[in-house]
Length: 351
Image 1 (tube, helix red, strand yellow):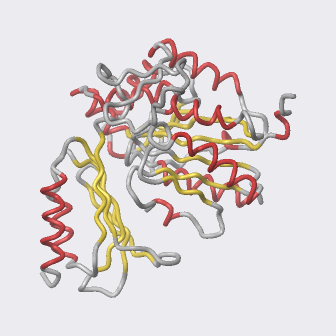
Image 2 (cartoon, rainbow, N blue to C red):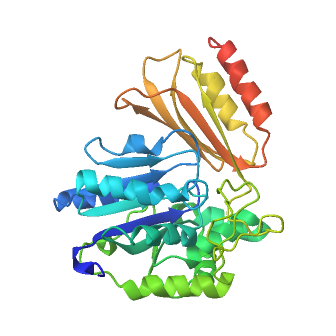
């Protein structure tokens, strides 16, 4: 017997490329729910081995971490389990899923849809945060990352064009035109630091038709086919569902097979000036980095974030036992060279 939708737990997916502002939006939505005494739970997905964005979420919010892979590919099968365990244990009123910026939302929709077969959930919203300056730059040089950003925009039920303060007026117009060419239906909001009307996350009935329309539009554009990247880690047994179409050898359109990550754990404190210099000279192929570090020249610990040539350090007091670690995400950069630099940095801690 079908589960009545009025008893289903709403699920909202936050999508968008690396560094676009998804975690900033996530925290605003969490505060929005708390102000209404709504119990929220979170699933956060990271490509690296540690969840650093989770440091921004208050400790009283139930959270499941899915690490070392992407929800839509290497650990896709785990999403249903994580959702079920999170809901069974904490009985939230609503669930937020923040996907890694390297994920194709349509494939995550498939994973959430599978979960609806045996639990009462209702995917309400796919809110895509668009990094305005980055979309503009990527549109001028093309490539796989630009295609991924296009897919994320096509899939959205709601669009947030972020970082408007970093665009000239004519550039902002161009960005909105780019977005509208890909998705003419989803409501579009232009923001700075993702400050926007959060009523789309209300628990009241959501415009489900918009979600269906987003899926249909994406299927029209892509042929509705799920493809795995060249480095996909799916377990393709012979008894795997043959209706699920995979094409490894000739897949030129994988959503994130070009994305690489390097996770480095620090053995102890490092010199702040040497580390900041290392981050600032990262090759352009590394477009995102973040981590938690302890410096030899200060007693505090810092969470650092790096996106598109800009680095930010935030003084923090981590919850529980948290390692000093740095995660680097990019395309085709030399992991060996970067690892060597990090090791040299550790050997010369006093700078």
